[in-house]
Length: 226
Image (tube, rainbow, N blue to C red; front, side):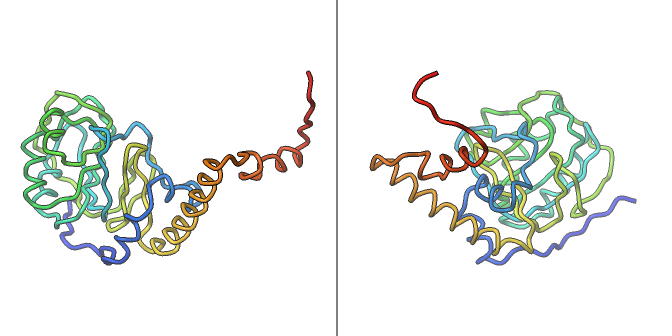
């Protein structure tokens, strides 16, 4: 039976600020390289970013009824995360719905399907992460689910999980892991900045990365000639 849950448990402002302080790729690395959605899901415009609690939607492929229902239900700052069956040729989200999202303060859209009105969405600057552009329209006939667990881009997502995306793609961070993973991510980024500064100063990447010793430990031999 179709079911809409209107209220979800969202991260605190402090947790959301932590999540925004590190890049999606850093979150992915800090949580042992898990949580990255299918790389086919990318921003419709380079430079777009999104970070916020997942407001999950399950639609029937080729039908955007539940997406419209979610837009009318989500709170400011939420990210619409829409499982639409991976139908890349559908374009069930366009300028009208993007305008509605902006007016409601919704933070972005992540969908495993196509969207349309690409030029208009880019002009609006609304963060949309999709499998690409497709002009094929959708019907509005089939009821579904809002704020139930979904699988999107190969990753299980629970309402209220953090969804973070940029040009590299989208990653999911479980709500209960936000502080631990983001603190580890901050430490990782600080370490990497130190390495990059040392490289700018003429440092050796093999030594700074520890890779020379790892190569030796794995039996790699170094010679001055072939």
